[in-house]
Length: 57
Image 1 (cartoon, rainbow, N blue to C red):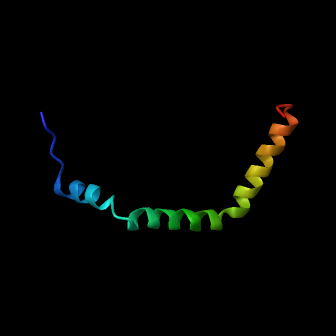
Image 2: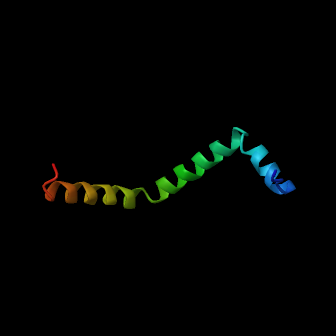
Image 3: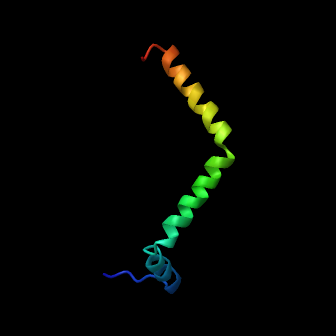
């Protein structure tokens, strides 16, 4: 039994190989990381401090 994809899904799968798609995803991720950089920094520091204080190091 073969499955057929709707026309829109087929177009999305075909476009997913386009080099522009990963570039756009990377750009969106970079902008999100830049916008929340201070939060990510404090989250990493807190995680490392908790790891150190737990005696795991």
